[in-house]
Length: 331
Image (cartoon, rainbow, N blue to C red; front, side):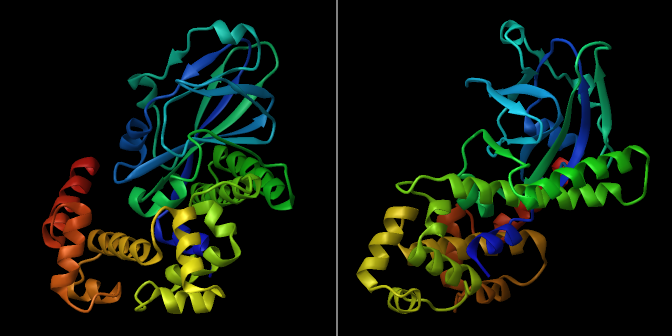
């Protein structure tokens, strides 16, 4: 398996569509904070990535502190850091409109596993937007999230897979509106595929001099090393063994890895092991010593020290705290 697939599989990615907008005339909206949306729709979510898929028409999108970008039919815009943002009519007039803030009353209309219709205006060309979100484990997703821009725009008509996604989502939204059973689950899975496709398209556009985790995946040698580390995180890797299997000298791999990722290979592996362990502590009731062994630690004491360096708490205390946070959000 490649490293991207391994990370996407580990971050507990879940998705949903919650709003179908049909907007006419002049309009401009400031979205609610992603955390507030999550508190209504998925309170147990660790991190939320809002996205919008333009099904018909054109519109503008921008970060609160950024410039407008234009979206045409078939475009997808995501906000990997969960930033608040503005959506507006694709016209000069909308640039001077004061955005209408999505209020608490509007959020109260949202329902988990339901798509809420949102209609504004009765005349003029229609802009139709499907709004969704993706929830993930923020720490495990960090390699991807740190490599993505705060506003990520991609085209879902670029290529066979993207076009299939666009038509599938359009069909599933229509099925959901008619209350056909299973539509919410289909849209959740499609949202997850949409994110993976967006990440892959972004990787394809990175300039040769780019650094970061996604750029490293494209590197022939570092990409292979990352795939090995993520495929077998519990293996007692050394830089020598990793370099041999990646097809590069030890010093060359170490230098190349650090220049792209920002840390040496074994330091990267140690941190990934701890993040995997944290996920298992939160998701299971397995004994700490068993989790430590599963991620590659030979002793519980060594695991406890490494875990506390990363999280500031020993594993048992962190597990209790994580459980309390989940209960509080859900309540």
